[in-house]
Amino acid sequence: MRIDIVTIFPEFFDVLDLSLLGKARQSGLLELGVHNLRDHTHDRHHTVDDTPYGGGAGMVMKPEPWGDALDAILGADPAAAPTDPAAAPTATAPAATETPIAVNAADDGPILIFPSPAGDQFTQAMARELSLEQHLVFGCGRYEGIDQRVVDHYSQRGRVRLVSLGDYVLNGGEVAVMAMIEAIGRLIPGVVGNPASLVEESHEDGLLEYPSYTKPASWRGLAVPPVLRSGNHGAISTWRHEQQIERTERVRPDLLAPSATSERQG
Ligand code: ADE
Image (cartoon, rainbow, N blue to C red):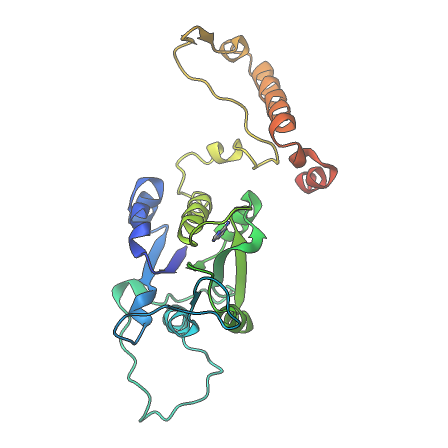
């Protein structure tokens, strides 16, 4: 999979060199391009925002740098008015991190994702769906958001999604994108060494996961539940399932609501 990120804080994503996703990048399972939106401004101050039409607090991200940055990744707008080749600026070779990737003929093209508290709720099911894609492009907004025409324009050209991490407001999209990339990236086949460990996690079967224990058998007066040391695999499996139900009922009863249950049963 290839992931491109457009942001005014590229350093945010340095941590993607670490851990499982860092290894996935080294082995070629994950290709990452991080692009600085300010590289696509044309004024001395590298301005990316301006005051909102209609008034109001805060600043809005200007459409032009976003258009330039996203076109450098997705390719120029095929519907753009043809320009006089003599007058057209010569295309600059993309920087190493900006090489647009060739997409498979069977692919529907990249998905452009804007993290936004006004988007669809990010879930494990969405992470799984997105992990099957070949190319994801994330646009990290800041301030009061990105000029709506950016979303409208790219929605006319391809697949665009607004995705929310949850019902709270972050200062910008970067943290949301980090969380999404981690959730999606670990589902790419080969990224997590033991695929069985993915199956037993919270949300994979619509329930929260059961509690886990390791050695020692007793710690600070707290014993490991005896069934886990019994060697009886049937009893262990039953106990774990009961724990999942009990925990889900207590912490997230909404997951057990009839609509969630029918989704779980597919
Ligand atoms: N940007 C600001 N808040 C956000 C949220 N809750 N989810 C995704 N992106 C955001």
